Length: 489
Ligand code: GLU
Image 1: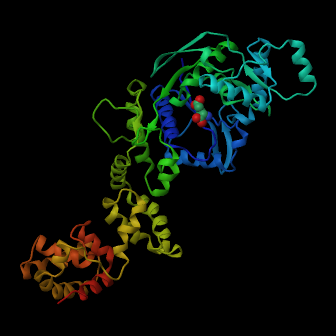
Image 2 (image 1 turned 135 degrees about the vertical axis):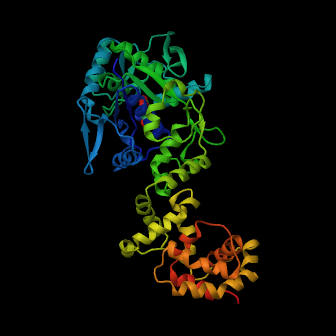
Image 3 (image 1 turned 180 degrees about the vertical axis):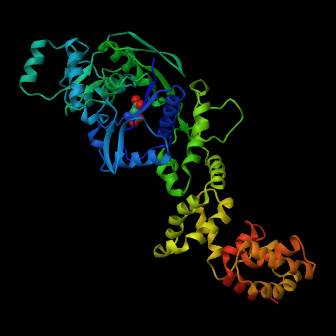
């Protein structure tokens, strides 16, 4: 069997990290099996249509770097199809659903339901009082063909419902959950087609997964309880059901499903904060899947080589920003410095530290700044706060050890020699700076921490920080001399 999988988001406008993980696992599973991974858009809920939402999501997915082989693609800002099983946007497939719906009506697996909203609300209310789970009472299930025709002819509005058999167990096997069974007693006669002529998700998903020859449906566990309905639909349509795989939820610290209320949940939130896509992908890969070896850092290529559904757990993984930060800081250290500086610029511009019109001129400087600071940040939006020491005229000396060094005899001794050596320096580079400082250490006898700690405090106000020679280079000659001259003598 050739493996064909899909990620099928609704165009809500953003890609939730849970959705991104579903996309990733589908992609990885396809890769591991030389299969095809496709992207389909499930937009049958027209009430939830948001302008630009689809483009936004495609943009997030492409930022995350999980390419699909087939489906909806964005080319030069325009949404188009790639592949021969399209269209891949459900709202463009209405004629297809209609045809299959007719088959279900003809075979008696579906029926038109003329119940008004008010009636349904009343039924729901009564059902709720009775036993908790509101279900449709089957009022229109057994209308005669004559009655149906009359109502249709008189133009009554209607929906089409699935006609589930009574008291029947519907069974399927889920690769993660094992055998699942549900009795139709606990299921509703699902609406398949709404009165606006659009199918519901439950109907469209079955038709599309079949026609797009999906072999494995890999999706979030919130769909597990709907799957018996889908399985019944496959039977009713005379089709073979795909293999089902329901991934555990991503949870917050209270072990509730992670939602917008818990802060950043969308891929674009992390992008905006300056997380690198390779870090986010690495992190979410581990939220549910555990590698064989005790390894935590994975490139996408390594994930492709190691991923298997057998190692995806039943229970949900807790989203831990600290761990994500740890992984991101690893990728920040590894990143190509030119690329990182490019990503850093918008953060510095936004914080007002560099002017938009000066960006070209400042590029080299930003590169050095980023090189100095990348080890002390978790994500790029922390850069401006860390960088401000390079922009301020005054330094703020930290209380405690830094303050002691600031007032120390060592610094008093170093002040003049430092000013002299550095003001004479023509080429301002970490290597020349290092060279110029050597003789001072020799002449004053202040070496190691007794030299570097007071110097760092004099220039930055802190005892610890990134490579001092680079800090001096990035601060620039003028600022360094100004700071030295202001020191107590
Ligand atoms: N459109 C559904 C969603 O947005 C997809 C569910 C499925 O993969 O079947 O979650």
